[in-house]
Length: 499
Ligand code: GDG
Image 1 (cartoon, rainbow, N blue to C red):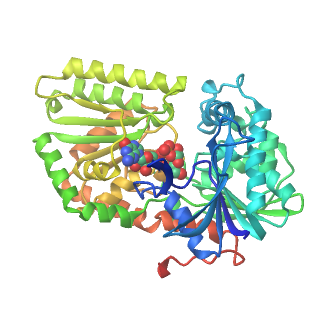
Image 2: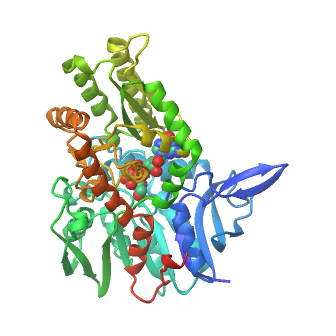
Image 3: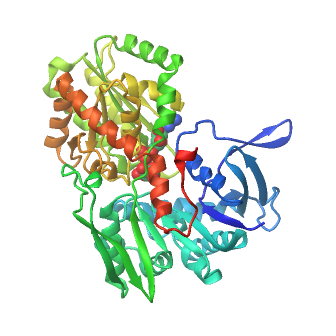
């Protein structure tokens, strides 16, 4: 049976585990993240489909079923697993996407590595995703494609199936023409995106940047521009915009541009917070801390996340504020998602060397200023650290959104804790009550962390209440609903209240 909603997302929507020689498909251990929200849409259609990839030694004869049927709490849906060789995965994902696109998307021209990109393989893999989506989609179905590693899917899909409604969401920033046009495949990528009905981004800045890139190369027309809502224009952020283009015309078609900030599952986080085990964990962490304050930083190991800049600022803090020695601890969680890539391995080494230097310079037998954690922490434990922290210190140089800051706020129903947030995280346009910091400036970085540590309790509460209200308002459901609404009435009715 063909599907009314097809989600194209490079990862599979469950964990595959082998039990007694048989493969079982299980829900991901932690219901945190966007995958469960995406799957929840399957409950609203007669039939859904998910397209992802799976590694195979011989893609023409894979040792697994390519299309499997799943029936779970979310509904009935098929999962198509495109068999890709290890070489194809490395080429399309680790090389083209991570070494060439990722640095450009985040504005790091100097890290852009063009030479190893194999464009024919990138096209081939994207074509395979498009073909698989076309095979599953019913007449007039919605196909929702995620992220830049699938940039060419909309264009191919439009050729294969002109009847479909295609939406594409970027989880990263989108740079302006000056930076985007470093990519030699710029025109092909933009033309593919303009084959969509809806192109989604986290915030208005990325939308306007996309328009700047499109305008530089193609004859696009701005059909509609709207004022940005107050919920997305905090003056404290470097990424705010006053107005945003919401409709473009290209080759006789209208393309809706939609800025919807991804949010977090506040109800799930609150449920974890309410558990007795969480309270016990928080108590243990606080006991361990004694009278020291906990600064918490969480993120993937990536040069975009500003980890080095943060450790350097922490070193200056200990240097200039001897009174804080023994009184603050920084827990820096930096987990490698792509440990085998040179750029990430380098950052990891730099973090380790800097943390070691600071601990060596200031630490004592009783007190180590930095705990550098490189292994993933279970989400429930992470929530306990969110609860125990005095300050969440998040300093990315560029970040599409940054969900950690929202998780931190969602976990603080005690209305305490201070969020220090980079002006260059997408979330900064929403969280006007965060303490803003500019990771490119020593003065700003050092000033913000000291300001946060010295903030009186009433002000902490006022800021946290305001941030929490925004995080609750623009949560994960708001995002999904907003993206779907962009299609107009024709599509899947969204009714979260009915859940
Ligand atoms: C991309 C964009 C955009 C981290 N450490 C642990 C752990 N995490 C979880 C956090 C959070 C997630 O990973 C990280 O999300 P972010 O949004 O902060 O960052 P990216 O991974 O770079 O995500 C980003 C996002 O897509 C969504 O569109 O916001 O800008 O770069 O949920 O909790 N989770 C666990 N242990 C850890 O040690 N369990």
